[in-house]
Image (cartoon, rainbow, N blue to C red; front, side, top):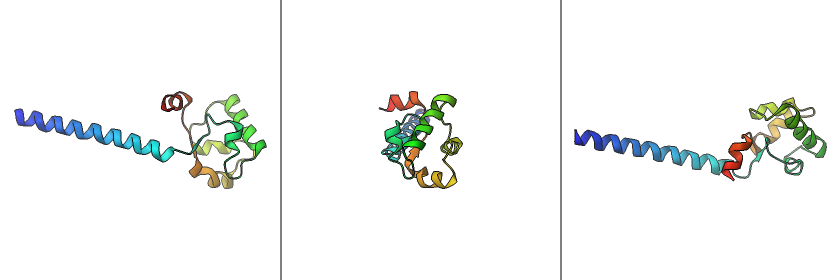
Length: 104
């Protein structure tokens, strides 16, 4: 019985460690990416193919409609099509404002 409890404890510990490692890995992978739900016009302009006009439209869309739920939602913004999305997909993330504030 004692041996089973030790194994269970070890199993739980390994599970917690794996969860923490995956969270850290995800944070590191997202480092340097632009969160399109919180980015300013200036920050959005750093993306390939996004000029001032499109950046303003992205911010306006976000203010009028709400946050983007997934990266592909950015195509709903006038002037952002499949080609633009393909250029910026690896540079952007979609994260809720509250979660983004906690990470900072």
